[in-house]
Amino acid sequence: MVSAEGADPVSPVSRPIPAARRDEAADPFSVRGRRIVIVGGTAGIGLAAAAHLAGAGADVTITGRRRAGGEIAAGAGARFAAMDVADDDSVAAGFAAIAQAVGGIDCLIHNAGVDLAHGPLEELDLGAFERVIDVNTLGAVRSVARAVGLIPPGGSIVVTSSPAGTVTAPGMAAYSASKAALDMLVKTWALELGPRGVRVNAVLPGIVESEMGSESAPDVELIRRMTANGAYRRAAELGPVFQFLASDASATLTGSLVGAHDGISAGYSHQVLERLGADLG
Image (cartoon, rainbow, N blue to C red):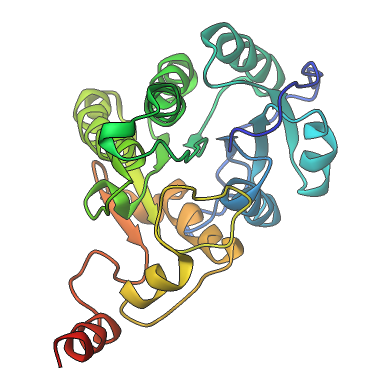
């Protein structure tokens, strides 16, 4: 996530990490030894994914703008690289430091994002709208463009998108537009990078405990009722989804939008139909 202003300089790590994949023949879900970079990994889903992947044996680097990024990363078993996805120079410097530290990237997870209220159309806060697009969509473009040269054949890119890219609500124009654009970028990049042996997929989380406030979305309880099972997930529950997409177990997936949202986009849940029925009655 993009969070507090300011960031510590990156401390290059002298220890080279080989991209050994010794366990994969026995366990295609293994990420042991893989060099994984999580852009926007100092809080919420990104940090939870970092802790899960590091615990699974991956060599994890997280990026962000937090001054305490190094301490946060150490707590998750990862290293830290300062990066502001809204600043191309910062993105370039961040990936240069990562390249110096680990040599290459086996899986890039782009997770940085914001959600700002921008008001109804006739009262549009254009600055807030532009900020959402700049971070959520162009931030992914900056990140992937700078990182792709570090990803070898057999590597992968995972973008954190949202079911809001296809299922929206009044007031969510900027956030939904930014995620819909991400979904199309994932499909386009999958086609562009396929000949290079690089897969590109997206994870679409649903209602997840996160430090990022969802300013434009409906109340959390309303969204929970839109799920098929009434679930409200902890960020840590998304970790295995990212591991799957970073591993060879997902070798057949590219250009895929992997729904991890408990059926929000499937249709009308029992609770929604009951509420509509009660209103009509």
